[in-house]
Length: 90
Image 1 (spheres, rainbow, N blue to C red):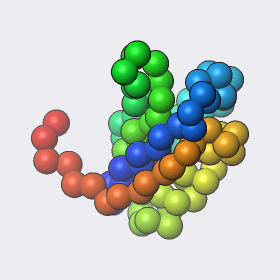
Image 2: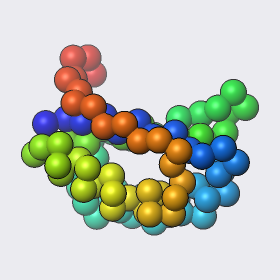
Image 3: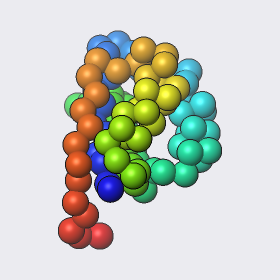
Image 4: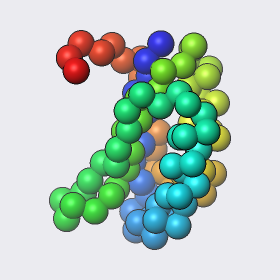
């Protein structure tokens, strides 16, 4: 199942994102369940959140992945939404 993870960073947390980015990218590589991903940008073009498309067996697996993300463990996010997603284009 495909799940969209939409996370918004806490205000003023850009340095937290930068400090944990390498670990986050390694986690993506290690887990092998990310189909697509990239940062959300604010009006100034700075990273301010994440959009990650997970290819996982079920929503529990998506929650577990989200909880294990180094960004989440670092307290980066103000909010995280997990929503089932259907790929239609691309």
